[in-house]
Amino acid sequence: MLLGYNEATSMKRSTLEEDLKYVKKYGYDCIELRMDKMDVFLETHTLDELIKLIGSTGVQPYAINSLEHVNLNTPEEFEVIKKEFMRMCQRADQLNCRMIVVVPSIIDNTVPKEEVLEDSVKCLNDFADIAEKYNVKVAYEYMGFSKCSVNTFSQCYEIIRKVDRENVGMVLDCFHFHASGSNIEDLLNANAEKIFTLHVDDAADLPLCDLDDSKRLWPGDGVIKLNEILGALKRIRYDKVATVELFNPDYWEWDTEKIVRTGYIKTKKVVEGYYI
Ligand code: ZN
Figure 1 (cartoon, rainbow, N blue to C red):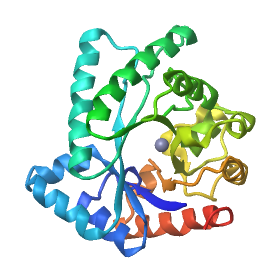
Figure 2: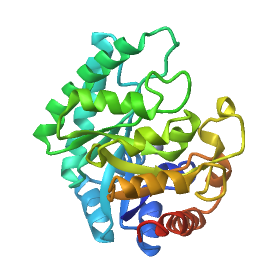
Figure 3: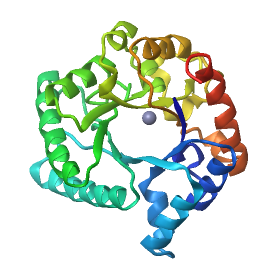
Figure 4: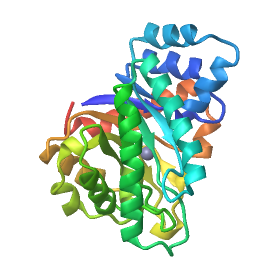
């Protein structure tokens, strides 16, 4: 299992350069990049400098996060989304990064699940057609909130199975798995080939309906049954990457080095009992 760092963990005060510096220093295998941090870097640097900066670290750029609100759009809205997706694919290919994370829309709960399924399948097929040209994969990341149109492991997995394409899979984020009350049996029955990346995190001890991304905690510091999730992943032979990904504003106030170092220590500790 590779260990990854997702730049959202140090979203507020850090930069791409700082994230990369410390990700290299503390020995992560890979990084999930954020498009916005790269865009800021490119305001004052060339693409060539971006490629050289990432290449010089020896850290694998594993995915670009994330394109949001991708399903249940009007045709006009979806054309805009597809343009941005194409821009992300071009960037990914230039960086030899082979995955884009896309996120379903937040909606009222009035859209029937069947409609969400059909629309998601159509969107993901359109993304897959574009991504193929760049040799990039598409990872669909459900969110475990009631207002997210795709909000459980089983619903997301069903969509991915229906798309049934080699370059389309899903993200398993432990926080969203917990927040949605996703079923461990569904994970045990899944094909690990369809899980493209794992986001590792933890959650405060709150009613599930009160959880939002700001309540994420370091792996091992909360109430998510990470041992159950990791055990299930081991049983289905998932063995790609475990990426720490938090959106906690309290941690964003820390020095970048402390964030990146803490993420490494905490994530390695919970994962190594199973994989490393
Ligand atoms: Zn995630």
